[in-house]
Image (cartoon, rainbow, N blue to C red):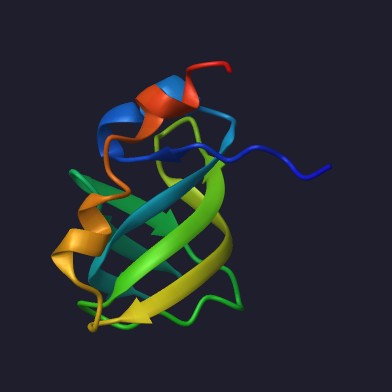
Length: 102
């Protein structure tokens, strides 16, 4: 069984320290092995060798939340620039759904 990865934004990172999460956002800065992603606020992302992100592209990151609230990337998907705001917004009221049990 695979690990559950709640979809969160910058506002919920503190709640999920040490856990694996999903982030949907936009790459706003690339600096070597780090990137800044706008996901309801800026998040510093520590990239791995397989992370191939482009500036201003929409991305989904699966990664572990560090103590400093940065994210260590486990996997990254670059959606390019052709992702509509409507599609992005359907993912946003995030961790409240992750905290409910069925």
